[in-house]
Length: 390
Image 1 (spheres, one colour):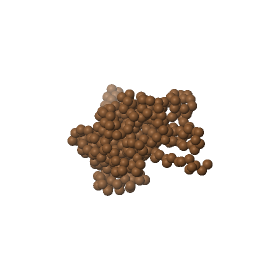
Image 2 (image 1 turned 180 degrees about the vertical axis):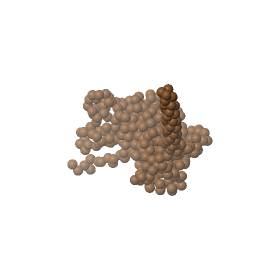
Image 3 (image 1 turned 135 degrees about the vertical axis):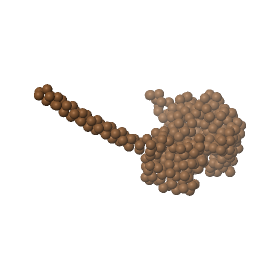
Image 4 (image 1 turned 120 degrees about the horizontal axis):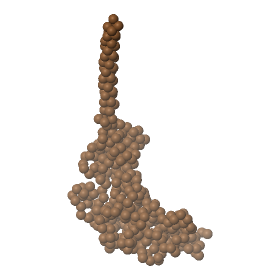
């Protein structure tokens, strides 16, 4: 009986264990099924609903980003503008209506997008802040030129000689040979040539200052120069859209040809050692002292090229002739071959009596700003001795 009882117990135990295993397996299968179903549902919005990249209308399309850059491109309307993407974040921008009004006035395609486009918009801006605004457009016009030509101060224009370019490039850059500028009845154009600047942020900062101060055009070489990329355009805060930009394939030939056409070239360079005394005033223009025995002074020093002979303290280049200002690389300055092309040199006095830490120059974008500001100052009318009251 004992043996029979044990067999029954073993049989019951086996059946019970089988039922538990079947139940456990069923629960495991259901659990696995639920887990896979949940994974699938969670992953769908992330991978199948998000847009990976914004579509290109043309192979040469560029994406501008940020409110200021996008608005400037729309205002200038120098490019072909394809599509404006405005994310929900951008729709809440305090000045979005001004941008929309401009976009609608030129019948620009506008797309309101949500978070599904965020990844694509971040990619279009290379991860930089875009504030919810992305504009697809053709490249920035950069007309290639070989020289600067005739200038008319009375009719407010200067001419350029356009270099050869492909049909496709001409469609982007144009073939315009005459550009207007504001002479205000007294000045010739100021043309800024930027050579060897490799930092895109510096290039954009130079364009921003040049536009703000009233420089009439900018040129860069086709080699050994930072590109007018989205980084440079962003750094310019949109200013690059509003100022003519040119490219030069042969800088030495360009400068030589322009000089023969009447343009005068100023090279940004260190001032002569004899002039390296501390700046006497914070002002950047000439200061005229009524006392006859006190020498007038200026913190911007003009000298004749290849000499240390100083020009008059109140010299104003654009009041005298069409002017090219050359700015060189951040670390080495202008190449010797370009310095040899200059008619004049121009530099800025150091503000300290002793340079304790070895800072002997300014950032190229800052130096360009100070020099352009000085060059564009209208000369003060010279007072006669009887005009002084005291």
